[in-house]
Image (cartoon, rainbow, N blue to C red; front, side, top):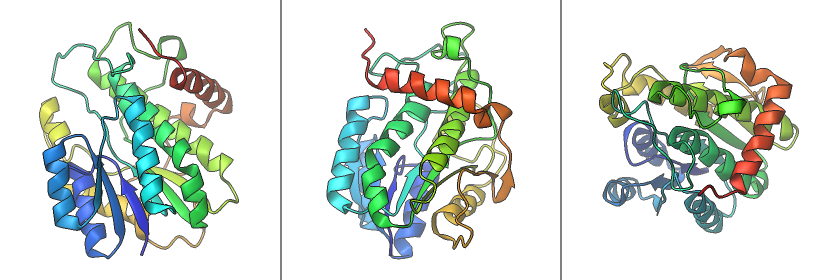
Length: 265
């Protein structure tokens, strides 16, 4: 029986994961932004619920502190929460800290949450970090990290997911030999979720496909202790080359740390 934290568990893939993992007997902490939906998931699964808005770095810090206090030892962190493409033609949006919204929620929040929960993960002795990324990736322009020029929600989403994959590679290297692994995946394409419906795109894959692929990284035995890997569904795959570039990853991490300690007006 593992202690598992799932972000974005009040809807879509996260909610499906919570249901399956609860039925398997795991102890869950579930995160969501919508209090009503989150409470329903907690009732259905017996999980501990923590509400937080991941567009706020202060909320991310509070989520990490409450989760660590509750579990003590964390066996699996599933960074699933995210913001999609947005409605067609929607303009650029900012987080509560003044950062481009998709970068903030899809990358800065899981980056910070992971770093804050590393002590709890290390206490497990055999922990897993699972980052829900996407096959939709675009290179990150470090000179326009907030996408202030030529903005589109699709571009912002894809850049944020590339950044998350690069972070996964980084943290896997950092934690090599500690017993903590970090992997990421594209669970499935355009599943029938609120995020996809809001974007106006048609559904391609089933929620069950994404659920199966993600559960595999969370609970399946891994005798090789694979880490730093990107999966397309259940298949090992390669992300865009930028995600593996040590120079880019070092520069991205440096910029990220600066953002986490700076308030924009």
